[in-house]
Image (cartoon, rainbow over all chains, first blue to last red; front, side):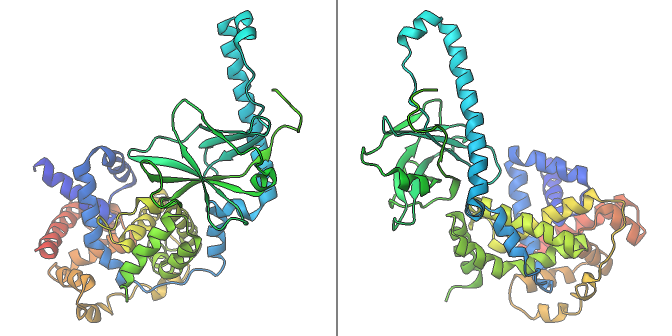
Length: 245
Length: 182
């Protein structure tokens, strides 16, 4: 048997559903690196799918959609804002601890004296938003400092998508459409954005921030066109008047 | 008037951009079909509904991956449900399934096969091609796809060695391919 026939038959049986658990796992493991196998599986799924039309539909239980809706982002965040904010505050505290730890390492490497002279304190992390999808790892960390009027975005878990750009949006009940907050780079650097000095923090505190995946260079329409990947909301992580960590 | 398929494609595009109304409509349009797929494989409504839940969360998260030039929307969604259902029954392999009664009205698709043959679409074409297989082999293909029966389970049911079942299935599938693509 030639290898090509073998792949074709394996793909057919995979799509049919007759393989054992270990054979299925092996096919799934091979799939990402074998485009020929992947294509063959998709073609077999297409060939066999009319079978589904022969089944009598079964109505799901009435409560099922509600359960699904409670599990999807960003709806999940809307449901219980208070619980979500508490969770965010806990996460923000955890991330801040990590950031302090990293600064300390950098300081010990550079030498304390040099550090004392050259080191400018980072802007005070007064407001923090963790942008994430559902229960997954945080993707972006957004901090806003009201003294310097700077907004900083740092990619923590988000991965670079080939030919795509991440774009940040602010959503608020008083705004007719999402406000474009700019593109976010995924790399080691932080994106810094200056905010208008008369920025109303009340709007920011009650707004949602969403990151969508857009064509390279950003949304062509000025509104989100790609999937909304991550959502979050600001929480105050430091009391007013705190100037440094 | 858009075809049902075009409508589903438009809804999936809406879901991909985070539109919850499109998601709700997609659920309305496809959930009962997809639940039928899961129940038929896992044999229990409760388990099937759990799988449907997970599948729709995945559809919400992955709608951006859907490519209408590669798959039909129903095929794409049903594949998510089938794969999850198959994983579930393989995980429980060896344990016997308790039919909770949901199946009784679901196993009669043979009865409607004649009327399906009269349709002029993919379903009719698949049914016509299935007709070219010997009855035992046709039944094996059907039980594997719709009921998620493994080679091992089919071997037991048809009282044949597993190797024979594998050969029969693969030959039947290649014959189907020749008929469907020809």
